[in-house]
Image (tube, rainbow, N blue to C red; front, side):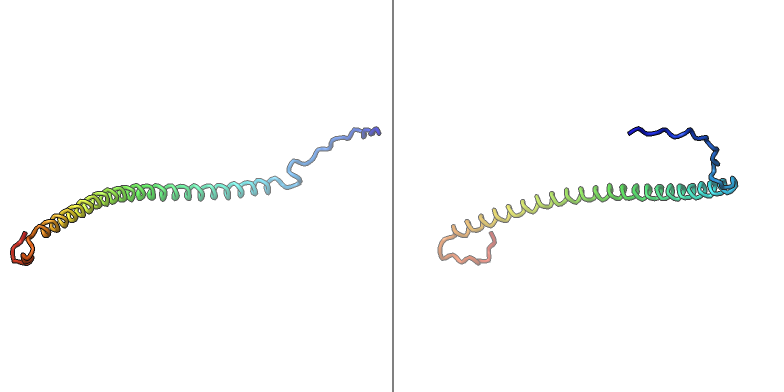
Amino acid sequence: MLRRSSPPRTKTPTPALSGLPLPNVVDYTRGTNDSLSKEVLKLRAQVDDLTRKTRVQEIELERTTQQLKEAVKIVGEESAKCKAAKEVIKSLTAQLKEMAERLPIGTPRNSGTRL
């Protein structure tokens, strides 16, 4: 099947602005630009505000992180002291028990003297 070519068409000029009067298009464009400019300014202000808030939170996070590190350090030190104290108590208890076992039988344990 062969297609027949259509006869050449003459190009008729089409109105560039689809029939809208030029001042209306300019006013519409100006209004749109003003609207967009206001929106851009509003968004920039939001970005600046969020950036400032983020910086404040980063500083707070750094401070809190330092406090946490210090607390962990202190807990480690206190834990070591507690373990050492328990070992001392355990050792002293063992020594006391050993000394009590060495006492001669029949010696009163509460004789008023301190060991």
